[in-house]
Amino acid sequence: MRAITVRDRDADVGGLTLTDMPYPHAAENDVIVRVHAAGFTPGELDWPATWTDRAGRDRTPTIPGHELSGVVVELGYGTTGLTVGQRVFGLTDWARNGSLAEYTAVEARNLAPLAADVDHTVAAALPISGLTAWQALFDHAHLTTGQTVLIHGAAGGVSSIAVQLAREAGARVIGTGRADDRDVVLGLGARTFLDLDADDLRGVGEVDVVLDVIGGDILARSTELVRPGGTLVTIAMPPTVQPKDGRAVFFVVEPDRARLTDMAERLRAGRLNPIVGDVRPLAETAAAFARHRRTPGKTIIQVTDEQGAQHS
View (spheres, rainbow, N blue to C red):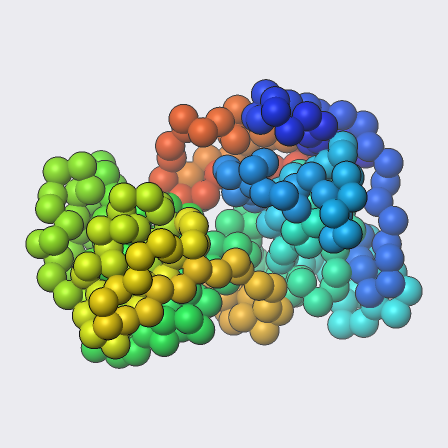
């Protein structure tokens, strides 16, 4: 099969190549998915799990990408809950070969069924972004109706979904970004938009929840905005400063089939709209990973279309 692989940690994005790889093996409780569309996180080449297995052993050449939408083509021993031919979407394991390939092995529990009327490219934009946004707002920050939430990078993959979820929960949403993100963020349901390049962050006042996806100086300055009893949640880096009378939480997203199913239902009902910023064929993955690229929403790699044609 064709796959994007990386062998040299020092080569960064330049080390991503389209190569032939062996067809994956379905271990116990796995399924093999024919990947139609895949998502990735731009910084994942820096993650230790990209380069080693769970025991810390080198596993290069490695296939990156951890979001996918596709069709089940094989069941591993003992696998239940899914069937061959079923459309699915979800997450691949952090320490195994990922989704930027024509086929990948995934634990069945990390996948959820996908209705026939949901496009694979849209579904592939949901797993990490959707689950991260939900877990940040509700599992960690316990956001409730009537509270105020400040969401940084509100036009991005995670934060654009967080804006929609927070608004539907009855929270007052303040979104941040660059000037050309304003219309997108307000269109998603934010009450207020703040230009991080031009506006004073302190003008926000006190908020109940901050969702940070940027880190660095923005994370540090955001701690001052959390009102007593409030929570700052970040996925960028462990916080070095705590809000004076609140909490700061750093977390890594966890798979959740039930929540993925809920997200898919929201998507079909028009209550949730992931922003797909760019769709590229498999051969253009390295260009899509480039750190200087900035597009709204999530970049998706189209691997195979519904008719089975390969986009490599």
